Amino acid sequence: MLKNKNIVLGVSGGIAVYKACALTSKLVQKGANVKVIMTNSAQEFVQPITFQALSRQPVYTDTFDEKDPSKIAHIDLADWADLFLIAPATANVLGKIANGIADDMLTTTLLATQAPVYVAPAMNVHMYQHPAVQRNLQLLDSFGYKFIEPGEGYLACGYVGKGRLEEPETIVKVLEDEEKEIPSYFNGKKVLVTAGPTQEAVDPVRYFTNHSSGKMGYAIARIAASLGAEVTLIAGKTNLDCPPNVKCISITTAEEMYQAVHEHYPNSDIVIKSAAVADYKPKMVFDRKMKKKEGSLHIEMERTKDILKSLGEQKQGQYLVGFAAETNDAVTYGKEKLKKKHLDAIVVNDVSQEGVGFQSSTNQVTFISKNGLEESLPMLSKDETAKQIFALIEKDIKGVHE
Ligand code: PMT
Image (tube, rainbow, N blue to C red; front, top):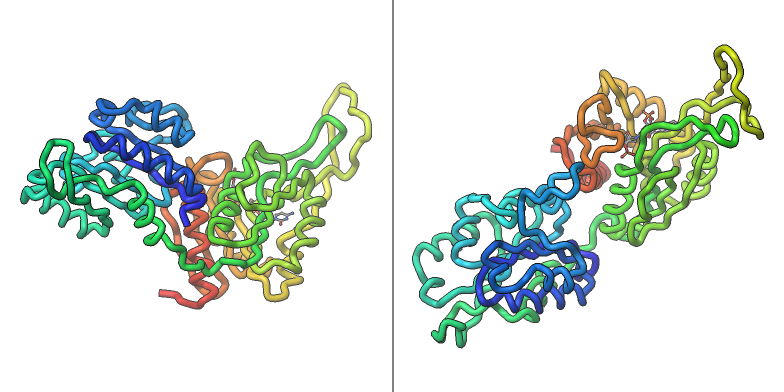
């Protein structure tokens, strides 16, 4: 149940940090991907390198340690999480998160996450019983956070009572029970996704292409697989790795994409075409490198096949989703494409906007279905955009419009 789950483990500073090390190891053994955030106090007990070795992931300790300029680390980590666990959660951290204080990597990431949050408190029995701590726990309960209550017994401070961090095995068991997957709507569905650019050769060394990085389509394929779908991803040339549990097929030209997509189309339930396919290709491809000449060069271009339109015309029960990359009047043009290509839905992005469409790690899209479901999503990571697209597809197929 925890296999392939992305777990952010927040570790705050108490003697029970040593148990968080064992917990990390047990979660990793269950197949979870674990990224650890340590507070400064936690680092007084154990060095980050311990968690790094156990999780095989970098450990986050500083909000301002931004290693990748294309991302904001705490937002990226918050979006990555399927589940957020704080263990041990000290009285201090409980107080901060109950009151919305975000003054370090752990608390800022927690505020930014939309993943379910689990809190495993650990402290001295009298601290745990203090009305301030109990009030903070109630507040956190009202936020929908779930608790893994501390156990009773001998405490490191010498007292016997409630306050001991629950044993790592028990914490893992609680998470497994709580996170038991209710099979998603997409479980077992055959989802065909296209991604990336096509390349249309002029000669052996030159080609026409576009700015697509493949990030949007790969995110769609990754999320579809995480929802239990059987995913085939047909992609042009990108620098991205094939997502886990996805069958990846690599193509170069629009014609190759046409062939590959049509081969898989009859056996697909849902098709999402986020690839940026060339609309034109050189009419003639030279088999030797063209030599430079004086004056300008004219290359005659001809239309490629419109793959999406052909799919719309040959639909046999598939739910067909197109993308529209526009730079003006995006929704109007998107609606035209929805009709013209006989789609069930279209995802429109205005690629003239900063952080939208090509290359970026974020996107801002409007989902429009032929049944009248229309929803503009906020600027989100591409993974989160993909999650929302699947939620909207499910809503549209089930016909539940608000
Ligand atoms: O890859 P990224 O860097 O993450 O960028 C994401 C993206 C901008 C590529 C993606 O969000 C997107 O908008 N994809 C569609 C790009 C596009 O080609 O849009 P279009 O409006 O030109 O085409 C409309 C639809 O027809 C698309 O679904 C496209 O796949 C399809 N099409 C277009 C031409 C063609 N010959 N055959 C097609 O199937």
